[in-house]
Length: 241
Length: 241
Image 1 (cartoon, rainbow over the protein chains, first blue to last red):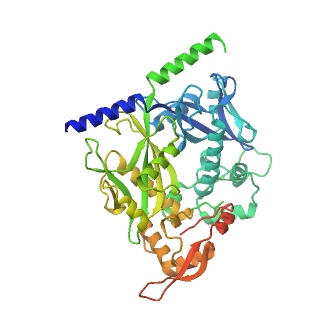
Image 2 (image 1 turned 45 degrees about the horizontal axis):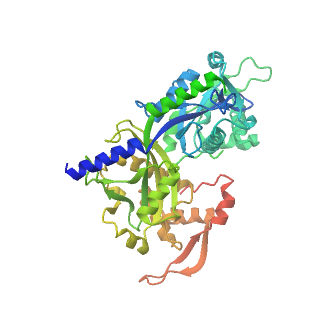
Image 3 (image 1 turned 30 degrees about the horizontal axis):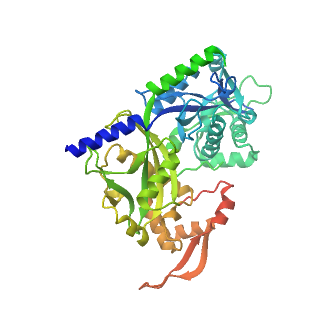
């Protein structure tokens, strides 16, 4: 290293430390589904000027963790889940997006099954609440824009990849699967076309069981055939639903 | 605001200022194409321990700009282009990715036409160089991983969206278009199948001109019909090439 190298390094370090430092956070859009609506998990905000508004779940990224690790930490602490679909979507960096100063945030979205165990865990935290995406009119900070961007990403990806199964029980009926697509995409689908497409895709396994405890004729139960999907994926698989 | 609110805010501000600040940078993977290869624009690095290795073009995000604005600034200063395809891909945040301290980077990729004017501009900067993606064996920092991730994104997106036209001249032959797909995807495509698919898609405009200055029989020239594409896009258009 020459003297000029050292001067360069010192200039860089000084500039980074003094002028170019910012806080980095993660914000998680946690989607859940319960037959009739796609919902997001929100928390009552305790930071003025957004006090008592709803906000997404998030936190500042700590010095010893990556942004992915920070998002996993937020999810784990708030929902109890460690193994859920979680995906980085986009950075939001408007310079005035946070009232306390410059905070650049990395948005993630995740998909979880809303089941009994899970609801029991959440009830312990009085600040948390599930609200249907369609009923969200505003959120604290720029969180409405973040939610909107992530929801569009979900609508796009559910047509291309088998991510929807993360929102359904392990065993599901074809009606449940169709209903999920209708609710996420906000459209009605023709039953015969939907089933024909699915049968062409060949990624559902008839598990030889039927619904129980239903008043109507029990429907057949299916599961997602991940092995078949993985084989087809390399050929440029597209759900096209 | 109550007293406890104020205390909370002070705690937050102190924590953000002292413990949770980091530098944020952008790194741009600039792809260009010249008939035979997909190339990236790199710069000789002047920062130890990577001195004289090649690195991507990037910079620290300034206090008064968003990450998108920082990426545009880097592109403009280095290539002279202000209006090119530029897209955020992913955050890279491994805690030891930068020798001078914690720097979280936002990766962007962009597509530009390598033409004469452009090459003339670049020649002014002795540090800049185009190298074929296939010949890149290593880069400074974690830039090889960033390049690899962005190249995979390009390979995925070129099958789904009409982004490839950003790499071609405004008027091109069907052979040039097929060659672009072959080079990006690293596969050979059947000429008849390729042309049949394109004709089904209906997004090319025969502009009624032919090549000039060629030794072989001049081929017809086409352009991308953006208006048709925009109409078809809402129905969930997929290139499928």
